[in-house]
Image (cartoon, rainbow, N blue to C red; front, side, top):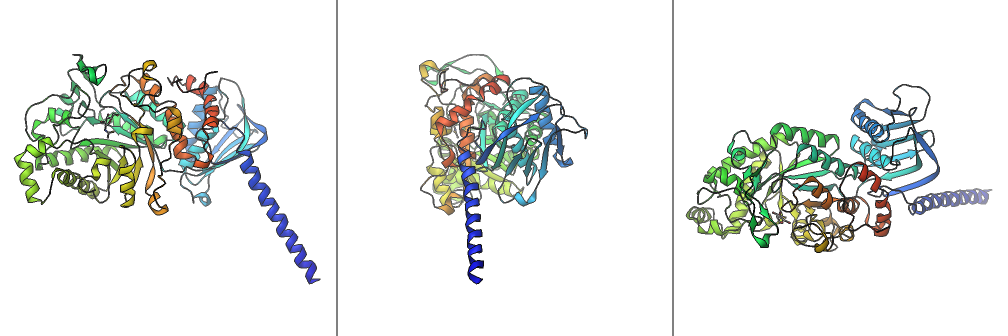
Length: 538
Ligand code: TNX
């Protein structure tokens, strides 16, 4: 009797094990089936059959998900002319459901489908939103009265929490309508941080009520470089523009609906010529100057006087009120020390503060700003030069001159965003320069972006936790129009989106290209001027 019981137990265990194995098999095997979603979901399978979305499909959402259900309804209406019914008439359903038990993974969502209903579940609205973004990538392109989509089962969450895109609006400016389009492109591919470069030598772009000359003077330049830097040619056309505080609020609110955080960048102590042209007293020489017309690095930088700190604190106070993000990017890159080394005031200050060189003076500058930001409840981030002369205690580092700065910062226990020029600079050429529009230089094709992995092997597991993710940068010295921004970012951003979302072992370039080809009708429908340079020719 005893023996029989244990045999039954053993058999039960075996059956259980076999079932588990079959389940795991079915999920991993099914991942070889092509699902046209970018970034590729981490776990999915496709069942046979389909779900039909038509005018008798109902969308069921809790009241706190009305933003998300509106998003899906607009998508169906605008892209397919389908109006799901609001009533309780019989029909199939798409259900959004908050499920707190799924909260172990940040930004998690899952999709469960049958022919009768699709359930998108997540611990919060962001997860639901990503579920919708995955779902709509399954819709066929074109306007039909009803559409059919495959029955997918998805469990998904990102590898990295920082999935960023940057846009330089100083060198060239893009209107509110285009910034919204930029955010839409980002959110369709689950990118979630918009780093908005708002000030630089060639133009100050954010209205600051306390300092009106930043706009009156700092937002206009008397000419712009024509052709490549080495040619040193300029036009004489006045170029300018800025974002009002009302426009900034509008963009931040729009981004929020797309679950994107906007991080403003106010450059200091270098790349500050536009501000200095408006208020020359902020420089060491205090001499009148002009908003920059040439690209590159200017030696005229903010002087670390009390007057400058008061100015910057007042500016940052207004900026912080406009941007709910906990971060404020303070630049910190490319600060020539010529002016500081020449200045009596700086020499005296270094003696007083016991600073051994101008690098330590730069560190003093950044640390003072950090203290101010922290007091206001914000964290600072800066380009990797902020490591020089001593890193501010709570700063996050954006590693752009390769990965070494990021590695050093992670080893010191600081958060890091990887954005090395080699893989993440979308102002670089993506094809042979002779056949591409003029760009700054470099060569970063689609495959190279796709091959990137944000966590360097040299970091221990504990150190690797500080790598928050990666970001694509769109510097616009050579990018004058929205169409050109699109050309440089797409499809490279799609490759980066997969780098920061999909586990490394699931990434496969030829297969990515196949999925990418299925996105072309959508990109075309949305009038996105994507580059075909790296797409396989038919
Ligand atoms: C370096 S990246 C810069 C920018 C330029 C860019 C051009 C960084 C922190 N500074 O000022 O626009 O190169 O690729």
